Length: 229
Image (cartoon, rainbow, N blue to C red; front, side, top):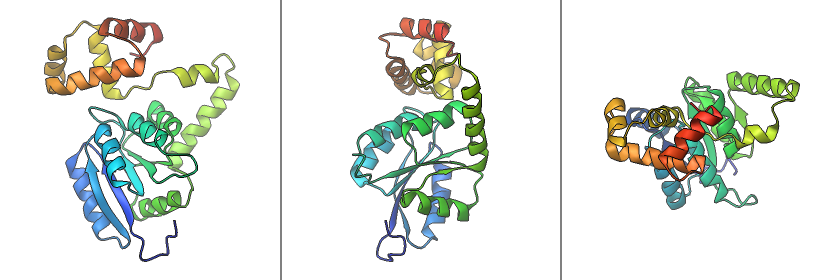
């Protein structure tokens, strides 16, 4: 994408479950020449739907969200795009540098990973970089990834295939899975976590799907067996 083409406006989709963050970023982009926020989503499922409808140039993707996390959403968005015709770049924008989230987003096909502490001017530069086909990792994240690969290379007992096959669950999903394993009902989970019953049901469906199991009993058994909680 030619960034010096003044006729071309970079179309941004903001994905974050905090409305205040989306509002702040939308305001910043409104002051930035050549950028336009074309949509907002509060969870991964909305992100997939809006990406299909709007075909944004860049999706700024949060990770730990209700209904569907950013890792799953990124994976599905990327899987819908032919490798030789990528229309949307995805930049993870998270408050956390959790190992599972970092590796999960990279494995899902994210074009970059930034922490929310990034300066605005640098964020704009990163967006321009990934639009040209480049990739970006926050320096703190890059050091973490380098350590992971170094450790992995020295630990022959843990194979690459075992790492890839490990189910990727968000922090909230692990929290709910732990309560499922303790025998809590959906309503009890909703009460304890101050969530709506519908939101908990959506989480449970997503957990069952990620673990490739049919019911809560199987999910609880797998969680204990695989050390997921």
